[in-house]
Image (cartoon, rainbow, N blue to C red; front, side, top):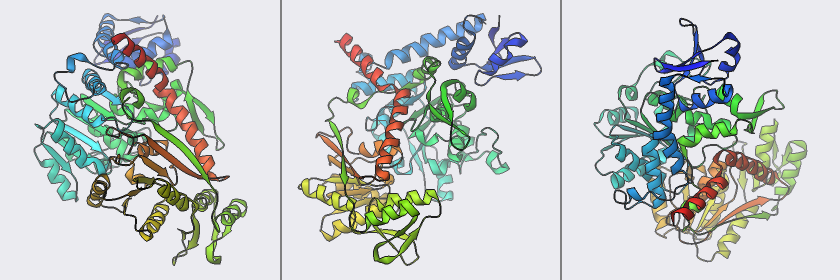
Length: 569
């Protein structure tokens, strides 16, 4: 019978040679050539996998048995008990300004000290993390966040932890280095700049250059805590910003990630974020995918992940659940008004239908004015079809395809504006050209509006949001640049002229108006052109939503929270 025991900060396994293949299945397993023994990381995850693989054919040494018992008593059991909780009475005095569910979040994060806060967007995750850091007394904190959120985080620290000094790392390289050198409690940097000021962690067989291995300014600081805001941005383990996050946080005691959508398409995407949160529980992606994910061959001979394996899903949740807190918005914010989502199918306008069908059939299409557009490959064809489903098109002076009027989507958007009377409206689209086309029509009609796109500077963006919230603008037109870090709840109507291919972006966009502070019923309207790629987009997004729920278990969480609420009354 194999025996597992703690030694030198690892779990060593004494076993027979015939157990080798089973031990290799454990994520993070390695062979110690000197001791001639297998070892795995000392973690709750390793214990769960070992028990799952060996069942009763495994004996635990006294030190490992004691460690597992204490870890379960002090972290796992309290964390699991908090997941369905609606309030923490003992925190009322210390956190009187928080919602009850936010006090639960603070308690959860303070208990686990390494966790993923996956509440729906608009629920105040930033506030919960800041208060947890204050409770834990962490005073050398690195916050990694979207560029548009840096000063929002600074403002929130000033409000919820006013004793903390904050340094925002932005501007030129020289200014960023100066900000890092400042003496402060909290340093805030955006995702794109992070990799410029830290070494990169290795991943798989990817080779690091000498420059990427070299320690930089952020590596010289001994961090008490690292926070990854919008943690789904670290879902690609090959990206430099993900490996920069790992490198700057490995060895740090307290780590929090925050995102309302930790996965977009399949459970394999969760690994990279959890590798940041708890690398000892998630040491290797290949074995994680093999053990917990269903995989099928795709048309190119590679493997696609389709969901969780039924036979190991329970083990998966035993490892993940004590590290992740997720509460559906309808449970934690019952005072929020209802969100009604509808799809309006709109017909083609003008040249659109002819161009669309020609491109669909021959990859060559006649545009407005007699110009001709070509697609050289299926991807370019798909892009053209998305364009022609939204507006007419013509060639600009450089010979590039550009959207123009008439546009069925812009016409439908203007109809909604007319229907809504004097109400404010938010519009989102994947294409900046389509957004700007709508802006030109609003300008002709004398309707005050603002843009939030990649071309808008942070100062212009802040001014536009302020003007919209104060009622000086009737319309806000946004690309994906407006899907994070802003509040637009002075409007109750949001229109997708185009939905994004990312379910994360779609959810983020709709939660710009459906969030704390919204007092009216919210209406989300999607414009789709019949018999086009728009309909295919909805099918793909629905499949992604099913994958998300398989991991997050929102229906089960709702049921448990309802039971808890009944018991507490």
